[in-house]
Length: 72
Image (tube, rainbow, N blue to C red; front, side, top):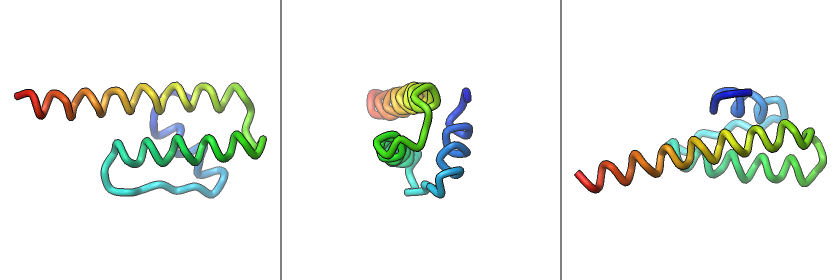
């Protein structure tokens, strides 16, 4: 698992499809859904941590894009 798409495919295995409309909101909702799956002990700790790391990275990237838009 290396990309946001991979995380989406992981969530899809659990019946979770996320499309809110704005990419950063999708990432935030995916993180919440992933936490719920983890709390239910349905996912391995390894997959959970890798997916969370990917989501955190993508979220930081989106925040930087927004910050750059507003500073120019």
